[in-house]
Image 1 (cartoon, rainbow, N blue to C red):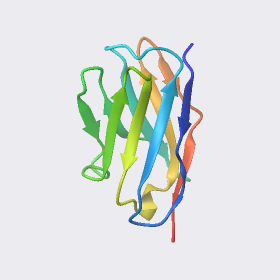
Image 2 (cartoon, rainbow, N blue to C red):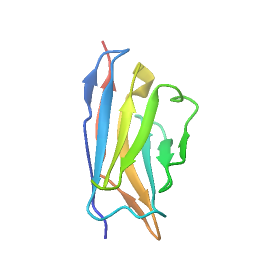
Image 3 (tube, one colour):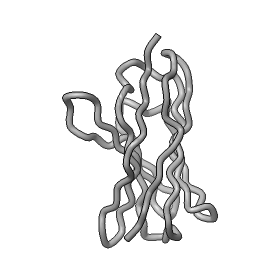
Length: 114
C-alpha cells in the first residue's frame, strides 16, 4: 500500500501561482508514472499532467505553457507548478501513482478567485 499526501493548495487571485506537492510513502520507481488530476464541482476527474520515471511529461491542452510537473525521486515527491492561474483551474487536485496498482491522494483544493 502506498500513501500519497498532497499539500500546497489554497486561494489565489487570477494570474497568480501555486505549487502543489505530493509526497509518496515509498520510493518512486523508474516504472512508476506520477500524475496530477483535478475535479471541478459538477465535473468528472480529468488529467492535468503526468511524468514518467524517465522524465517524459504530458499535459492537458488547457494547462500547457502554464503548468509544470516535476518529480524528485530522492525525496519521493512530485510537484505541480501552476502559473497564470485562471478561475477555471478551480478544482480539487489529486496526486496519482500508477505502478502495478493505482494509488490516489486525498486531494488538495485550489480556488482561483478575485
